[in-house]
Length: 433
Image (cartoon, rainbow, N blue to C red):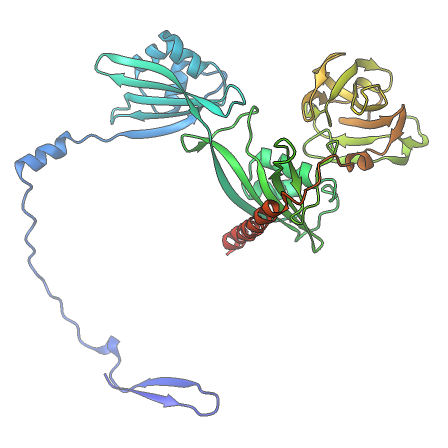
């Protein structure tokens, strides 16, 4: 075929003109060729193929209602002998039927008979996990429990906020314990309830704790946020975890230029905050008059966990008129009753008078007991018996300042975290494309 290029001056454009016939008008013909089949495989190769067996793999988690049979069936195992072994062997029974949410993986043959089973769970905060191993041997099944160290795996994540931070991190598949840490880190500087705008964004570098290469969930140990950033109304808020070697190994969150973000008190007694009434004058919906609201109301479904905002001792846990089920906790400094927090309208109290509690510990559940028009926890902070604004108290800082001796190490880590946060932001951009 002959073709000619037609060039147009000025704009630099060109076109292609063809002088041959239209390919669709050319004659066609059919060609038939005989193809010889491949030779049959040698007898020994065919025998080897017949002897090859596939292994099938499946994984899941245990449930509180599991029996040996129901668990195996859910994992795709059809093996009465294996179910009988789990029921009859004390080690296997405790490992598989002893609790919910334990990670389980199995290997079976082509007939779905059990070949091997592993279950993993955490019993303490030692940094180790327990592994149940069930294996099929020529003599039958055997079971043993091993202890192995958890490993930390670093992950990057980011997202754009269209409505709330919670929905944005859920859409980015960020673990819930990481979300809770983000709230604690930034809630003193950003109004995460009503201050975020559509188009704001977040980036986070975090660790998950893994057992045999698989993430493992536990209330006893959680992965840590290593660094994070929220861009709110064009302003960048950044945080980084740093272990200060001059403060007895104490770790805390700092801005990337070295300002501490740690406060004496958590900013909220609940993880996902929804403030319905702040520390201000308001029209009381129960008393029907204007009065000072001496705390902050955090709304949530009945049964939502309520946490103490600092270490302390429970001075009262019971029922009071108006407050319903209420808890009073005395805090440092002094432990003389001059610093106290109050948690009211609870549906359940999980502590008792005189009990020591630690920051972040669950002390009760949200309810609407006493004078309440809906489920929430009424939270107060009192100094010498007088109410103070909990928001201002939460901003007080007790973290040791960075000394000149540790500043070079901090700056090197901050430089690395800036690059990781930039990489985390690219995760969101790549997924959007």
